[in-house]
Image (cartoon, rainbow, N blue to C red; front, side):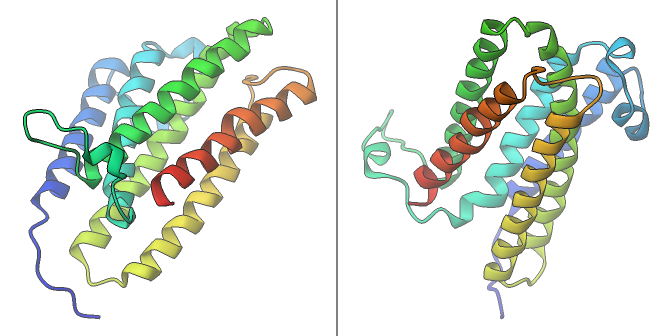
Length: 213
């Protein structure tokens, strides 16, 4: 397959911006920790967990958008009809805002789920684990995005490989949440299943249908 030359400077800007955010986070929030030290970091040894998790989430949002926005078939008409100053969202903006809103709503619902059950103290463990998980996922997305835009790779094969990888990472996340030490989920098995089904699996299907239907 021969791909016509296109300008993808915006991809490089996104990647460099995300790398800068990670460098800032490691220098100022994790006290010059190495990647290995960061991944082995425990709650008692960590600081700025929530802020670091927010920055890592931003990187994940951006790189997820870069990796998948090219495959969204169309921007819904009700989105394109919303114009501000004559401008409307393209595929990148549509996917980015959708992912941000998806995770924002999921985070709020997760907070209420844990606090309503009296497990709000577990949230900090959840944020710490999620921070590490989304950091590694973002690194993989950076590599995947750079490969797709700057190497002659078949788009369909890339999509299949990426989706299989995402499915594997998602299943891995569920296992990590369930079995992680220190504890990140409620003690009762039925609450764990409820959380996984309603706040992990179901929202992902909704997002997929919204973006690719």
